[in-house]
Image (cartoon, rainbow, N blue to C red):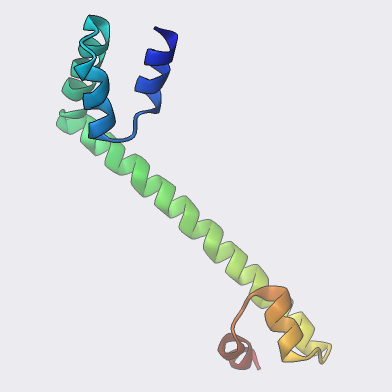
Length: 102
């Protein structure tokens, strides 16, 4: 029974949920039906939308911070007259991005 619950918690697709439901274990069917009821509500969907937006915003902020860090490193390396090839390798910036810093 524990493995069945674990498979329910790990299920990521409707097909996986349906396979569990097809086993005709009453408590699993009840749990899946409760899940469907909760996720069908507009309040739940809105909260999920906001969570997804927050995750996206956080990932975007991290990406931008890393990009700014790489640009600052590239500027310092350019001031030290380091070869552009090295700067590309060290920062992950493109040749074009580094040329635009000059």
